[in-house]
Amino acid sequence: SKDYDLTPSEGEVQNREVLAKGMNTGGATWTLEISYVCGEPRFRARVYHLGLDVDAYTTTTSTNWINFFPTMVAQLGINGFGRIGRLVFRAAMENPEVKVVAVNDPFMNLPYMQYLLKYDSVHGRFNGTVEVGENALIVNGQTIQVFAERNPCDIP
Picture 1 (spheres, helix red, strand yellow):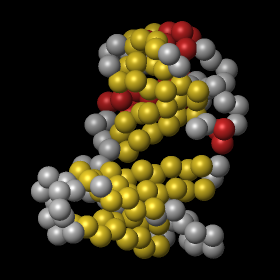
Picture 2 (picture 1 turned 180 degrees about the vertical axis):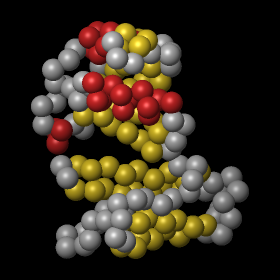
Picture 3 (picture 1 turned 120 degrees about the vertical axis):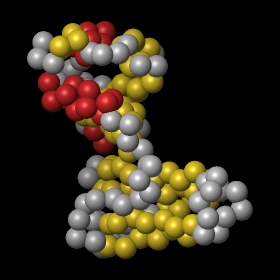
């Protein structure tokens, strides 16, 4: 496994295009973690390979899009689980290219989140299973961490 830390250094343009290439991608697993921590983008590319020569590099661009391999799954954290947050959650759960990994809402407890997701008065019943775990929602068998932080910068 090789890790590439692609976090922009101070003074660098924050809009970046992240590209990775390998001489042979057979049997390799590529992941790219992109997050914003207190408004600062953090990029990390991980390449799990079997003896492959792998190179990762960054270039600055004028867009916010991240270009990587099309099979990459974007990890999504939702801040706020009100009407819009639940709508984004439902759309993300239907998209195989997006994985919801966390929800933050300081004003809702887990049983209420479960109820609102299952029985939405605007969008109808959720088409799947919704259960409550320890500090998590378990939706269609997938564990989604739940936080109750007023300041999103305090989310681990």
